[in-house]
Image 1 (tube, one colour):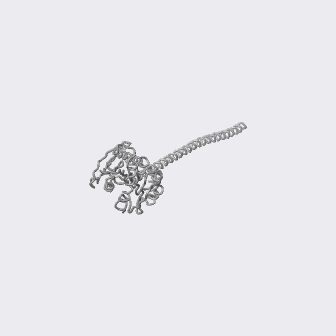
Image 2 (tube, one colour; image 1 turned 120 degrees about the vertical axis):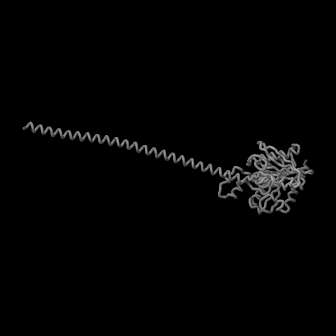
Image 3 (spheres, rainbow, N blue to C red; image 1 turned 135 degrees about the horizontal axis):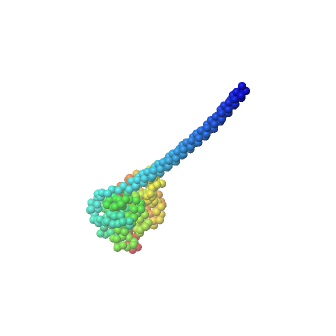
Length: 334
């Protein structure tokens, strides 16, 4: 009986110990499972963070690309707008000097960068000198062919030419290009004077052409310079035409005549109209004030354009007097 009781007690202890052992084993397995699950969860969390980081980097890169593309497009549009506003060429030649009963010679010549240019030489049998004419930014020289009649009456030769991209002249215009074209035109005139250094030349420019004329006068000899209805600089006029766009900061073409006139020592005739609807009268006055002596002023009438001979009483007479006086001084000094 005692042995049976002992055996039962031993069995109970063994059962209790097995239960404890099983409990311990289960606890360890659960902990291992939890640790394993935590590791997987940590790994998943890290992967999610990395994906978010990569997504943010990609989005930042795309935003930078979009910003750069926007800046490039804006810059391109401003360049296009600048070119469209600055140069308005027409290719078709309408009138010629012969339309106004003037004999002329078609001149085809090359710029220093090999652009094929076109001009007209209108000789006078009793010429006292030559007017080298630089036209404005619109149309082409055929729109000014009628001017030659007025100059012819002043007993001067006229050389009128088209910038690159205008009329029959090849290429596309820009500031440096127009300066090169004017220098090439001057050399054409020189060829009619046996390539002598000092020429009996009056350089005449209207509107944008006056900026070209001022540049040429600073580089080549002339007996007089006529600047009609022009601006102080292209950025200055851009600010007035488009005050809400930063075109004046980004303009590639400057034509800063205001910074050149003080160094031009030849006689100068400035003219502008208070009724000019494109270039403010004050700009013409600013150029005149900045210009060095000797200088003269004539107040034009009418709106902006190249009709000053017909719109402004006394202008033809003033110009003839100025040209004759300047060329007379040349003949005296020669």
